[in-house]
Amino acid sequence: MPLSEDDIARITRSVVERLAPASAVPSKRDLPADSAEQSVQAARRPLPDPDENTPTPMMLAAAAHTESPAARNVNPDVGARESSQSRVILATFGRNRPGVVAALSAVLAENNCDVADITQKILQEFFSMIMIVDISNCPLDFAALRERLREVETRLGVTIVAQHEDVFRAMHRV
Amino acid sequence: MPFDQREIIETIRMTTAEHLDIRTVTVGVSLRDCRGVTPAETGQKIISKIERIASKLAPSAKQVAADYGIPIANTRISVTPVAIMADGFDTAGMVEIGHALDTAAERVGADYIGGFSTLVQKGATPGDLALIDAIPEVLSATARVCSSVNVASTKAGINMDAVFRMGEVIKATAERTADRGAIGCAKLVVFCNVPEDNPFVAGAFHGVSEPDCAINVGISGPGVILEAVRTAGDCDLGVLAETIKRTAFKVTRMGEMVGRLMCDRLKIPFGIVDISLAPTPVEGDSVAQVIEAMGISRCGAPGTTAALAMLNDAVKKGGLMASSYVGGMSGAFIPVSEDAGMIAAVEAGALTIEKLEAMTAVCSVGLDMIAVPGSTSAETLAAIIADEMAIGAVNNKTTAVRIIPVPGKNFGDSVDYGGLLGTAPIMNVSRFNSDLFVRRGGRIPAPTAALTN
Image (cartoon, rainbow over all chains, first blue to last red; front, top):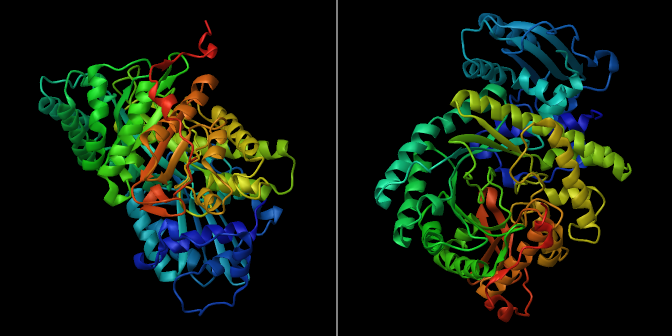
């Protein structure tokens, strides 16, 4: 399935809606029509105030991974030997600013998480990153670690989607 | 295990933007060992058993959703058809059991409990009749209890006495919940060839051949299929079927994984994954819109049945390979009120009850979440049910009717139930009656399709 900016726009719009204050989150039923065209238009709107903390769909849309084949594969050697019991995939989207990788890495390092692989892409001012992280030595459970990551989200205005590696294994490997 | 970045993005997109979630993790619980001398004692035993088996259901589902980043929308309980384990009690006793089920579901934090049910395709015992008589009161006085009655099967034919009685029961249930848009009827299904391991309400129950308990999982994936069909673009139908199949495979694998995780945590054996495409009222999470994305200008237009048949078949083929234990309904659902595309098609005049009936011949369920004028007679409701039962019995498949005659509402009005039940436009019902046919009663004999041995 080809990957387009629109894909990322749709993901990130939903993510951002989820992050918004409860009162501002439209109920599932109220979500707006979701045509590809709207997403593209959203991506073309003017940039928001740089100080704005919450990433907008537009910002995130613009952080799209373009289909650059060279950069597409997450290191194929990583993890071939390891159990996936305790690995998570962290996908981070947001406005590029100094310290995003550092802040994330710091939280992970403090909690004894090992970054097994990382791919990062910057498109114009926007940032996206996919990390494969081994959390087997992490003293916190996943929910608590997620809380720590949430602090990074708030502080740096990025969105982090965390899913267990087994989800990807189940869906994409026979 | 290497992952292509596109695979990672695809999965994230499915869960964040295309509404992919686990619709329900349903724990089936046998109540065959819960019989007491009195309804009160039986109710107590039911509550204790459900609490013993499923007390961790809701927290575990929450934990799995958090640990794996996959939303789980509902947790539910299904139980042995109550008429079987409570046979011998009168209607008041059945009502008492209904309340016990509601209490049990509330205590374990389950959204719904299915199994206030009976199977009477060949005839009814006094207990069956007592349960059927109790349905209107139970559905109006409880919040979580769901009821189903199987009135036909390929092997037995169609019990027309039960069909007519269910027409009356639906009317009575609607009247008792008239102040809430007749919502009681949204928790009541009439079946032909009912599956015994269905995790979806309102038809869920835990069949008599099931183990003491089992976990059955239902997935919700129309949004994901819709996106795949849209992305496939202008290809021929063979390529489109392949695209749908591949997507269904991925969705089902995720469902199976979540089911297995829940089994590990609850120490309950795995039952089945139901690979049904279950829509929600959210924009884009719609089976009708999948059909429209295939090239039908409005769901209900000529070609809809063929498109739905292909969709349903491709979903099954993808799902079959993804899980060794596929069961339940496993096809596409076409509930009107729960699907934004269906609602729009009805409002545009493209989709009628008659067209929906044709569609049910090629997909998994039947006339589902259809609101009709409150003036529709019990006989006409029964005749609509009979048609649907005939499609199921002759074609050796499950069909069902969940129809809501909304008191005080007429064709063109609508009624809003909120949440997953959505908004139901009141549909037009034929003004010609079939009263004499329905009142004949008796049993329509099993079709030749029954003679398979």
